[in-house]
Image (cartoon, rainbow, N blue to C red; front, side, top):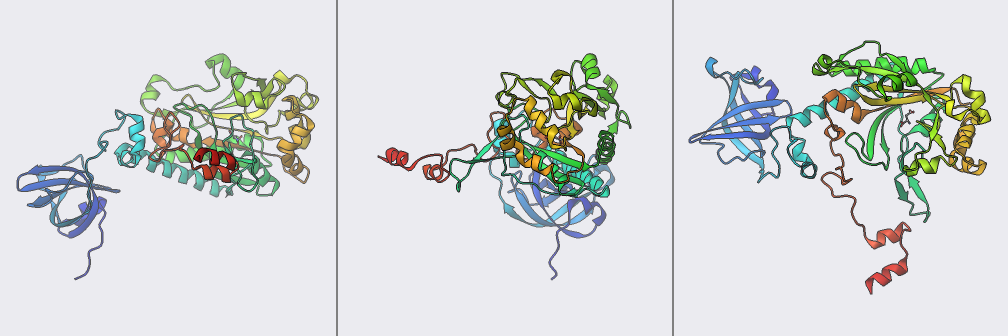
Length: 475
Ligand code: ASP
């Protein structure tokens, strides 16, 4: 006899009268004496299966394989709420592939009533719920559409290193000790900023990457240690070019997941005007009705001040802004051309405007970028304004200055914060709802319990502990 191939549940309504093999999870079970009903779930849907003197030993969320006859339901038993509601499966035989014992959390419902630590500890179960499946599948579709839109415009996807040098983007670095060069450290990238610029020097002209960025910041509902960006850079591009290109890419991707836009052309608002009007550089342009209808209201914010006074409570800012001045967004940005002379002369610091642009949606900043300094004296002047000595500049960004002396085209780019973007698209309030395995609010990893202790030998190996200390520990 020919072995039966697996049928996906979503296609069962067209197979009335046929014998099929289904594989999936027991979503629910209802025992009625001799007859047992289960709802079986796979990635394509849910179907009712009926067992006569069968199935009663199954437990919810167990994995089963079953063979049965697809039967049309009599008119009055059709379930209009279920895509497979016109049929049911008359089970002939089944096999339990994996038994689900007592479940630590329920898979039904939206899960928001469950304690966060518990949800994340059993994230593999939590992700089975319909809401989480929907969000992560939507995320995948959205990212795919972003990629397609960029490929169609001649962008190249290129990966950049994770073990690197401090990227100076305003957050605290995560450090990784080097085993080969004891006492030295790598930094995990706060973003691919410098490498993407070097790819412009390298002549790729149009780069993108779905990039992981790692920043040791204080945790909030919309900020974690790790984030994913759609990171983009373009050569020979003006601010107008970046904005136009990205607006088209964003529109294509949000529409692909069914979003409705308030404005087809995103309004462009000056930073000073936004501050005067909304008291913030991110704002929500939707009316109450638009909010209820789930509309997306995008806007660009432009003409930001380049520098600000250091916030003494922010350790990374204090470190970056040695003179008491630090950058507002990105030290690699360029001043607007009309401020270049002041910038080079270190004058008028508080009034210098940078070619920085942010993308705002429904009250959140979902992206930001700038036209960059591509001439060495401009970048050097930025660090001088922040109080760096020539030696410190050389040690920090000497490699960039060197690249700017071998034919670097003018360039600019942007990064979209994908976690936050998906959060807005999904109408969620925490970015954790958009990430498969996010950290908890106390910085513990999902499922696997990190940070965790390591063996003293490992600390010795990476030069964080000396051998004699171990001897002491052991005696
Ligand atoms: N590197 C910047 C960031 O991570 C984005 C950019 O300017 O492209 O915020």
